[in-house]
Amino acid sequence: MVGKTKGVLIEGRRDKSSGLLLGLTTNYIPVLVDGDDCLINKRILCRITGALDHRGVAGEIVNGITKDLHDDGRNST
Image (tube, rainbow, N blue to C red; front, side):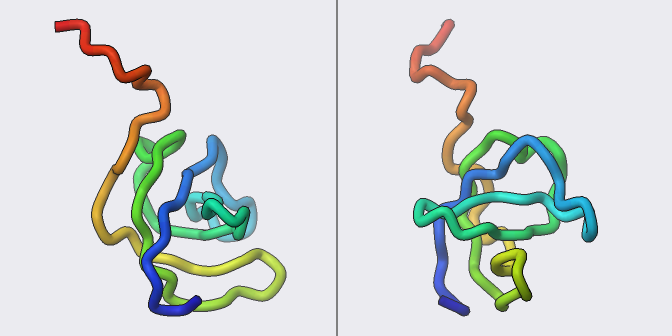
């Protein structure tokens, strides 16, 4: 899995021990990434950079936000 790019949904909380953003892949694999709180509740693309002990994998953001989960697809303009 290391080196692969995966879509990750960033959850509404940070990892308690590291302070990193916590997200899940579509296979429910936990991913820890460094990023701003503005990414919470958004889908992003991450490159998996390594395995962590029992907490999942480490990743780095590669292409920003792919979908805002609060956006229902309708434009107000």
